[in-house]
Length: 348
Ligand code: NAP
Ligand code: GDD
Image (cartoon, rainbow, N blue to C red; front, side):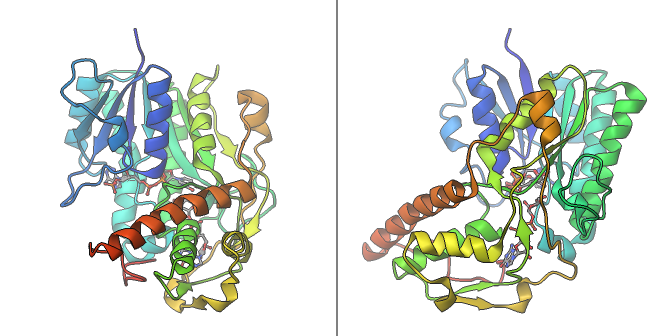
């Protein structure tokens, strides 16, 4: 019989890649989606062709990490073997604007799921999407599973609660629960207000004359960037290990935003300095200056390693966005409505 997985955050970047991965492995996948005033399933539509077919292995259910009763009902009805808790208000800058909401979804949402597991009387394996943001103002480099946390945003504080409550349910109730402490991972499906995708979208639109400028904040921050497809493999591997544990997942290389700009604009034969302007709106009240992960433990215990390096990552994102920009240009010339404005106030 096929295994059954439940995924929160299925409409997000990681949720979509993880679902592809699990379906390929023969899993039945249940995904929790939120009601929105417009469709938010773009990243998984290709996996969800015929919801009425009797053999469909992907089912979407309305629910919310802020709604315990929906979680209780979903867990009772689906009885999953594995739960991947990827749902979150995941934007660090936005968490300074909506700190309480972020704590509810990203922090308390985790204990709501854990309690729903107990309520349903089931013992699924549980994956918590923890983050390198926990290391914040880093006390050592590179960061490992033993590096102390120093969260620097409401988002990171909420993730710290989620991390520790996951450890606590493992120790209190013997739940097979794991924290994946994932460093930044990007892709062609990355949300457009995260810096990597904001850059590749803008660079390609500038190249085709669809945009003049790109407004950014702090260019000196450094991140350990990997490819999201590689990182969802690690989530699954954690739940197949002999013992539940916590793992750092990273490439072991760090690059500044400037280096990302060099690579993305350089691939298009453009000099970013001619197009990028600093807008202090994108600064954060407290910044995370440097992240660099050491994933020796995951390599040793799980046999995990990243396949796509920084250069390849930037290139694949630029190539994808160049195609999008070409379509946009073509549809503009057909008189269709252009997608997305140059820079909206909502961009963070
Ligand atoms: P993402 O693209 O922003 O996706 C977030 C997902 O959470 C979306 O499906 C979103 O649904 C869902 N969600 C938001 N609020 C919810 C709520 N109240 N109830 C249920 N679902 C809700 O994030 P991602 O990049 O895929 O990241 C996945 C997880 O890993 C997140 O928890 C993130 O914090 C964490 N993480 C990410 C990275 C990274 O570099 N990507 C690194 C470390 C940890 P809608 O589509 O309806 O908004
Ligand atoms: N978003 C954004 N927009 N960031 C900018 C901009 C801008 O215009 N200009 C500079 N940056 C800088 C930010 O200040 C930050 O130092 C860096 O670019 C990366 O920002 P994001 O891409 O928004 O990612 P993040 O590192 O804050 O958070 C992401 O990674 C975490 C893992 O470390 C998110 O995916 C989190 O959910 C995740 O936990």
